[in-house]
Length: 525
Image (cartoon, rainbow, N blue to C red):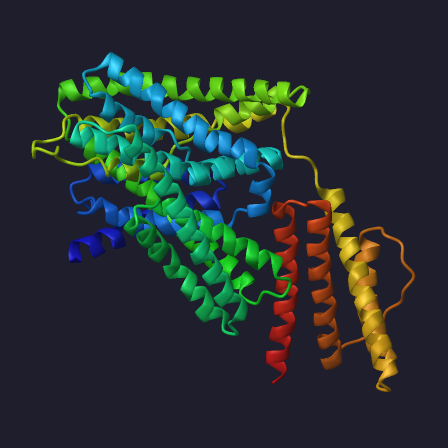
């Protein structure tokens, strides 16, 4: 136990230290932190790998995937659900088959183990893909497709891996067993996730203690992952489904008290876990390679070259064919430049590394499982290679002339609409107060109108209003006006189909303004 705790402590300190350094310089953390892990692994006093790799899978990856999904959007993914499902299921199966058949053909590795390698490497990584796609300033729809694919395809890949390993260890597996395993893993994971997500959203929406409610979300990924795995469901899918449900529920609640704290908490935690995950990949890369002899290293070198080529080629061909078929189905031309970028955005990451550790040590008869070390080494080197290739995505996007549209005008229009909603709420409150015989002082109303008027003027939007000065009634009215803006924002989202990637920054700014009013109230008491 002490060894495990010391490993986590030393590794976390090193990983977060390097991540902090790269963040301050505006670099992506994945490669520098991975390199730091690899260099650390070469040192004589380096922390040894955790004794139980499944502990790292649950302790690091379950909350990491939860945090990534919490920052994603169910609505945005739902709008692109067709391409997401095609990539998350069809492409994973095609890639698994392509790699498995190729590896079995060029080596003496049994087909079941070759397919296991394919299932490990088939899913793209949610952490790596999200970071690279956003840094490349890709169009919002394409980012939603890539993020949705990387969140969902882990469930497919790990389920196929489970079937392949059963076949590798037992020697054979029937079609019925494969189907039952796949259905149980997907259905079990999603059901556990939806139940967990509903429970979390119910508690957080009704709790008056945001600290306690958000503390519950910290332990949720571990409980959900283990619960799903206990019924042979997909733990990763359970975590993703719960996080997407909770994120949607919090975003759809105009007055969610826990939302702002939750976003801040998980942003910090996700940053630390990302650093830990990539550091672990680097550490394991070195540890695995050092265990191989010359013959094994030669096989790994061959596998890395061939499998990387097959990985990229399969993705390119699959997406090209899918886009062509979709174009014929709709009777319209598809944007092949976007297809090219989607095909190139296929970085692998920590999920593949942790999945590789699930390869058992022995066969059903008790003998050692052959080629385990070679498969582990191949996985870690390919993770490094795909991360290096992903750095070319931004230059490729610029070369193709593809970039995210300028949303400035749309943000200004939304802000103006929200400002008018706040003024309408103020008018309604003023009218109601006058009817009750308790009119609001004109200087208070004038100041509040003036504040909103200044916002509209800064947006170059015409309105006829004036300004003056501050206190307690103003704070109450301001909070009601901000509530009106929050409600109006959700109305615009639902009626105009705004993506959550636009809604959430505005929603967070409104939450901060509302929180600021609460701080002022505390300061006065």
